[in-house]
Length: 158
Image 1 (tube, helix red, strand yellow):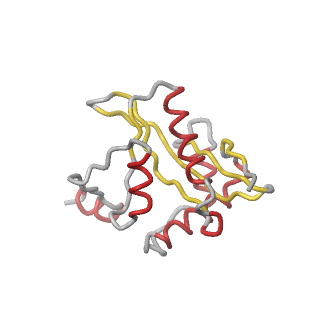
Image 2 (tube, one colour):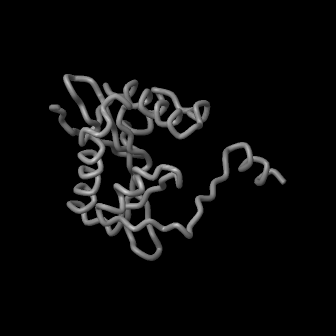
Image 3 (tube, one colour):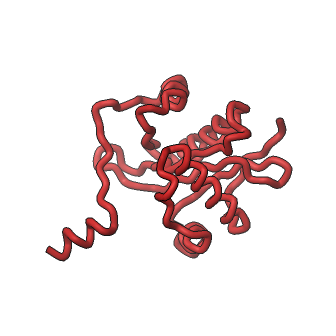
């Protein structure tokens, strides 16, 4: 298999969205994706991008992506949050995911970030075991907490 890892470009927006939708289906949330191709273009490729990404490309077809952004830890300083890492179903177990993961970690190392963090579903044992095998720490005692836009509005408007 021959694929390349490169920085994402505006021309990749539809393929990125397709992978995000595929990930939502895999994570049993098929109707959760609300963003559009235009959102990705505006948010990732404007003068002040909200994220960075690497894509895996084979024969000019995007087969995977890793989307990440900078955040700040009060304990560690500047960190990266790996939002999503996805390889299309037909191309899994061929080293694509590891190559994307490595690209993000190398970016963090090269740019002097102090930590890379991400979430993984507790039932995704293949991913958990992979991450552990690379030296990542699995924090089983922590829980993700979120507030969606609708509940945010309800809370603020009380």
